[in-house]
Length: 325
Image (cartoon, rainbow, N blue to C red):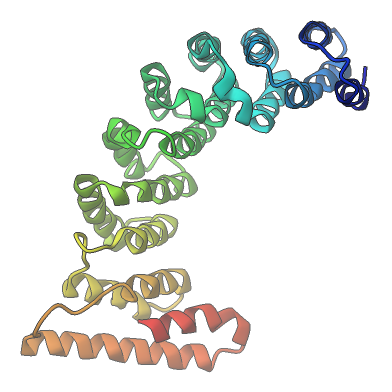
């Protein structure tokens, strides 16, 4: 029976819990078919069935069946199960046996197949609303940061960001491991940059945000840091600077040096964002006044270069940051 027929039956008042479970068992049977097309079509019906019949017993049974299937099927089918979790994640709080569902996903997370582990991380991320507080999920996530597979590390970063929405203390659990990966040259630059940006969630934690500001200074100013990491570090500094985490004049001067670097437009643009966050504190010494004047000169030169650039639209964003700084 199609979804339109299911909806019509529900509207007529003829649908019942027994009838809904019958549909669920039919979909489960089709998911275990030998025909890939039929399996995918059946999985596509799960979110629609749950939207129409959001009974806790049906929702629990449906997700547990999906967990069983995820544990034993191919990666191609696991991909489509991930899509079901994403589309039906709002039903997850109705699941009454969340721990049993998590066990099924963790079986795949601890497998020897890196692609399967990435898919398991995606499921955990989609189900963060119910999995985030589980120690088992947090431990499994932490182990994935030790992987040598870039896609797996990237998936771990995305899952961490999803879980932090529901479990802010998770950042303390993964902090040391995550920070260490930023300095690991074996990790692709783009993934390292992604990790740095994900750390902005530390803004609400006094101790971690102070530590992060120091790390970002180091990553941004180190000459051997990849450009992607340096840009991400400055973007993160801009996001976490607040009353208890203020930039010093020394910081501002060092970041302003990027404005003088030729062929480093990305770094210069990122530095402008940071400089807009700096505020002078109290009276300045003569030496400090000289430093501020040097920064002003750099900003003036940068504005002049941008205004004389051939492409006006390309430099408007940077020019706005110059004005703000």
